[in-house]
Length: 358
Length: 177
Image 1 (cartoon, rainbow over the protein chains, first blue to last red):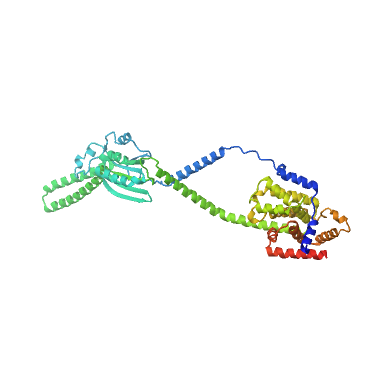
Image 2: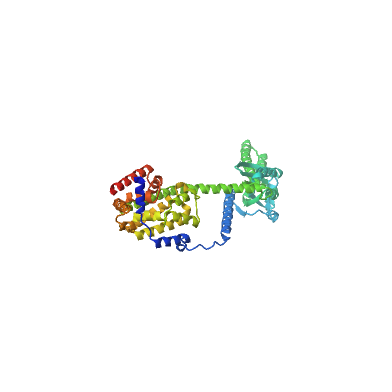
């Protein structure tokens, strides 16, 4: 045995020995698994409410995310200009699609409102039925908002133009745009007043009506005044013509001719004014807005394709939430890790320092 | 309590990475108990405290069996690490130096026994070393740990541990004369 082995044996021989009763007690504790220090766990009961609660929360989250994704496609703004240039106005608004009865009820029942056919002849003020029969002269404005699925948007806008053509309407302006599956179209139509109700009914059948606003402007007084001015101007001209026939001198004749020219100008002006008012009464303004929801539907059924699309959107949202959460938590995690390392190092140094005092 | 380093080594070599059964822990306990006690007593220098710390260390180890990772060292080194932390925590708590230590062995009473005289000299020499050197000697000779295991336990490099251990042994030899 060399010196090293001898030293090892001597050191081992000087090792402090545990007292037998302590060794026996610890032996018993080890064999008992130190159970007295910690009460045994009760057997776990089968809890079904936890997975049920998790499932319910997941389903709720999916529904909320789905609703947010769907509602994010819509926006609305009023397209109807409700301004009035005078006279009495009556405004009606419907947010639900009107039915046939409602459409028919919109036709004036009292027969007092005049809506003539297109192309009223000029210079008939004396025999103007509007003035002669005392009917009301009104201009009608209607704003119709339609909503379609993304895959039927183009078809619906084409059908709006088709309805306009069939009803003899004039398309004053149109604008169609489509991007990212969302479409928007606006048509400003001049619809023959006599065919307004039928045209609105046809337009309402093209898609889901989300809003319909009707406005009527009564300008009977203005019309009657214009007709009276025209009649007066014509009567004045007839009188001047008769006076011209009886003129004795050239000077008198020339003066009458000049007055006849002025009367003719007044007649032309009055005729223009009356024709403008007639056009307002003869052609109703109809503003048609078509929006697509951004979703593709086939007969309204929720297809597996829709389900896959919805699931994709939900996953996108979930991934976004995870990324944002990770971005927020990463610095905190780094700080916590650094703090843990520092605490561990400090604890080790303090322990080692305790050894120096032993 | 007989020492059985061979059992401990065999246990370390053949035990699966995570032995969680009470029987496996009991094997580990029996293989290391006496050495752990000797090491703890060397640090805390108080028999009662050594018993408390030893019991506490084995209970901690029992509760934390799942935290043992065979890739980071043997079970023996693992339990010595737990015992060291418990002993140093006890020192910090007490902040005092206790008087010895172990019961005087029987051989001390035999005045003319050469081995007994030599071991009395060794004991006195050990008490003359500073605490850090005493710990190194205890880890090496009581714990039977390798230099690498000692280095990992003390948080230093293996070469540094070897150098310090060599110096401690040299001091012990010099003190023994």
